[in-house]
Length: 113
Length: 113
Image (tube, rainbow over all chains, first blue to last red; front, side, top):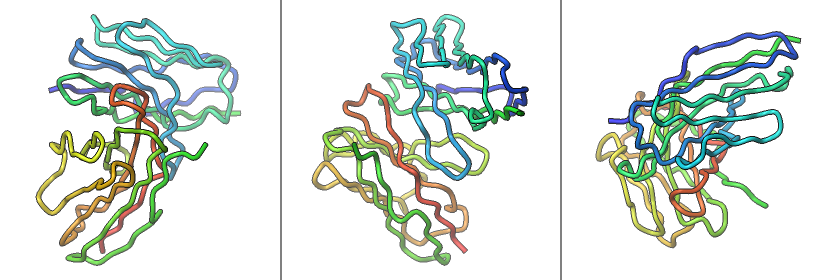
């Protein structure tokens, strides 16, 4: 059974700091991994999708990496801003699980002005 | 363009009642997913449609839950004899094809009194 874990559950950093959010998964046969942002009381906003054939994806100040062999993904946020405060969720998809997303519990990020 | 929409945004019902939750996916998306999210947790998979058929319903918790997508577009999640434990945010997502990025709607917050 595939599982996804995110540690820590919460993180507080001062504005301007570069930071890394961690995601680990149990099955290296992952098909793709997706990072989402969720603001309080809102739905999920897709940030980045990394295919299993890729090592990383970049969008603006965000960079996501995928290491299948170690079962890890990271989301790097450069020059953090208070507007980045939200919960960040990672989710993996596996072919033998119908490509449904299996989510971690998220990391709640607070960027202090 | 228009994203995934869900109605109603909030639903309050009494224990034992029947509810229907609606999802309008992005036009042209063949895959549609339902997830359920409890407070402080990541979303959990319920059911996935490819076209009109339920390709994977392994996440439905019991036979009180049922979903349809009769014309391959709009989907309805139906819950019979609601219980207090059904209270959660129900999220719908769609993707162009099953292996592609999933885009989420804002969710329906269901409260069972």
